Length: 461
Image 1 (cartoon, one colour):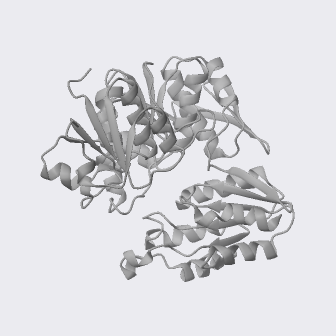
Image 2 (cartoon, one colour):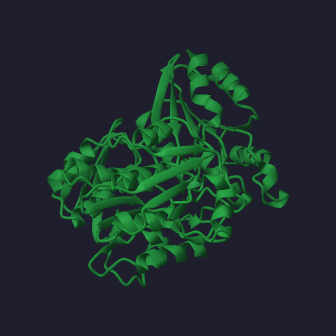
Image 3 (cartoon, one colour):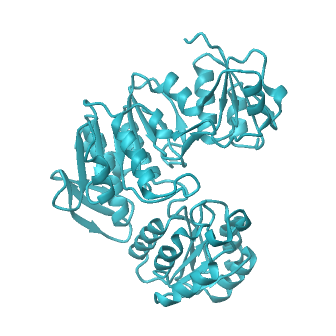
C-alpha cells in the first residue's frame, strides 16, 4: 500500500468520485469526503461503507491527517476546500490521477471514447466481460441496467472506462482519458462538442491524437472506419489501428444488418450477433464492443451471450411508461447527431407512430449558436418538435446564443413542425391536449427537464 494513508474527496457524491472513494476504503485507506449535494442513494452507499461525509464545502472540512485531497472536476477556484488546499500547500490530485495510481496501473484498460455512444458501448463491453466471468472493474458515465451501478473496481486484470474528452480538473486541462493508461482505445466517432472548453474541431482531434499516442504497440486503437475524422486522427498513430464499420475499407466489416421492431442483428468477422436494441447506431456500438472483446481474447460465443442479455442503459431510449395509449421515452440525446440517431431508432422501433420530440437545450454547446442550423435539421425529422426554454442563457454573449425563435422558423423550413414553449407545464398542457393514442413522446435532455416525464404520464393517464 502507498505511504499515503488518508484521502479526502472534495465532491465525494459524484458517481465516479463516490465509486473510487469506496474502492479506496475497501483497499484499506482512510477515506473522508464532503459535498454540497448529500442525498441518497450515493450518501447511503458511502455511509454504509464507513465513509464520513460532511455536507457543504468549508476549509475546516480538510482533516489535519489527510495526505491527499482529491478534487472533483465539478470543483472550481473559489471553492473553500480547493482554496484551503492551495493556501496550505497540501498535496491535491484529480480523480483520474488517483484512479491511475491505485486501480489502473498494470491492468488491461479498455477506454471507450467518442462524441456519441461511449456510455452504451462501454456498458456493453463491461457486461460482455462480466457475463463471461472476467469480473472487470468499470467506470461508466451512466447507469448500465445490467451492472447496477456506474462504477466499481475489482482485482480483475480488466477495466472498462468511459473515456471522456472533457478536461480533468481546474488545475489540469488535459482530457480525462489521457490518464487512463489504455491498452485499447475505442473511438466511436469524432465531432465538435464541449464548446465551453474547445474552440474548434481541430482542438478535439488533437486530444484524440494524444489519446492514441499513449496506446502501446501491444495494444490497439479500434476506430470507426466510416468516420473521416477518426481516420485522420488515427493516420499517424504509433499503435496498431483496427478500422471497424460498414464501408469496404474497414478491417472488420459490419455486414448483413437485419432489424425488426425490438432488436437488431449483424455479422462481424463472419459471426452473427444480435442485441435487443434498435437502430444502426446501436449496431455500430455493439460492433465496437465486439471488436474490443475479441482483442481481449473472448470467444464469439461469449460475446454473443453478453450482447443478447444486455439490457441497455438508463436514459438511453428508456420507456418510462405508457398512459392514455401514449408512450413516454427518456433519452439523453442533446447533440444534433445524437438527436438524428435517436429519431432514426425510434422510427424503426415504432414505425406507425406519430413521434414527438421534446428538446431541452441544456449543454454548454447546445445553448450556443454553434449548432443553430444542425439542430433544426435534426428536430425537423420528428412529426412534432417542441423546444423548451433555454436555462441561464444570459451567461452567454448575445451573438453566441442559440436563438429558439429562429430554430422554429428553420425547423418549418426543413419541412418539420416546431414550437418554442417556455415552461414545462405549458409543454405538458400542449402534449396532453394534442397527443393521440399510439403517439410516442420522446423527452431529450441531459438534465431532469423539470420532472416532465412523470407529469406527462400523470396527466395523460
